[in-house]
Amino acid sequence: MAKFEIATCAISGAVGTFANVAPEVEEYVAAQMGLAVEPVSTQVIPRDRHAAYFAALAVVASSVERLAVEIRHLQRTEVLEAEEFFDVGQKGSSAMPHKRNPILTENLTGLARLVRSAVTPAMENVALWHERDISHSSVERGICPDATVHLDFALRRLANVVDRLLIYPENMQKNLDRLGGLVHSQRVLLGLTQKGLSREASYAAVQRNAMKVWRGEGNFLDFLKADPEITLSDAELEQLFDLGYHFKNVDRIFARVFGEQP
Image 1: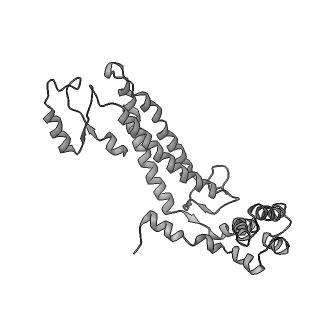
Image 2: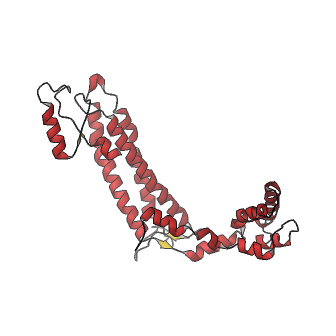
Image 3: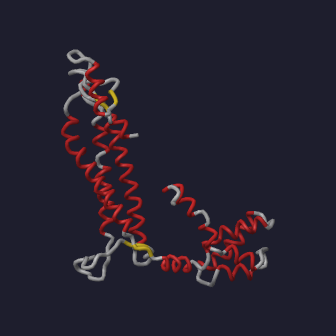
């Protein structure tokens, strides 16, 4: 939408009244350039269009940063479920040779800040004296090339990071296992309610056993099997602890986003 918002043309004279240029000239030029005609202009096209454009760039930049921050988190030593590709001879730290810093995604966070920094001056450019002073001009000469170039670079860098991202499924499984099965608490809760236990009682029973796991006293499934208030059989409980249940619609989500694959 931001593209259509800003893709407008105004050739309507010094104050927008077509005093010395015919409206047909504006229409012809706009058609040749694939632009829309600005319905009401002054000496310039109203800068609310530009503000909307830079706001859209900022939203895209924030989405880039959202992915970059997630990758940075996943690369933390104590998590390490994914990380940026580390080239041969690359240095993570000049002082600590063992480090593999997520330098590309850290860079993306910084670039996102720069793109977002263009929004406030773009908003301030909307209000111009006497329908157009030139206070906006110096601002746009800076933010227009900077914001667009930074975002273009950031998108290309993010694509490269994702394309070469290293994934460690075994660490994902290890991190899940560290929780002692607590990730399945919701399914147990719902399973108990389907057995006729009230939701309040189900919640209390599941939470009571979960707190033991948090205290490091043992495994969640073992506690549930030993609890006389848990009305599910051992076989039913084990079925509720199947991780595959949570992945059953993953392919459908990918197809929704990327389209059906041949």
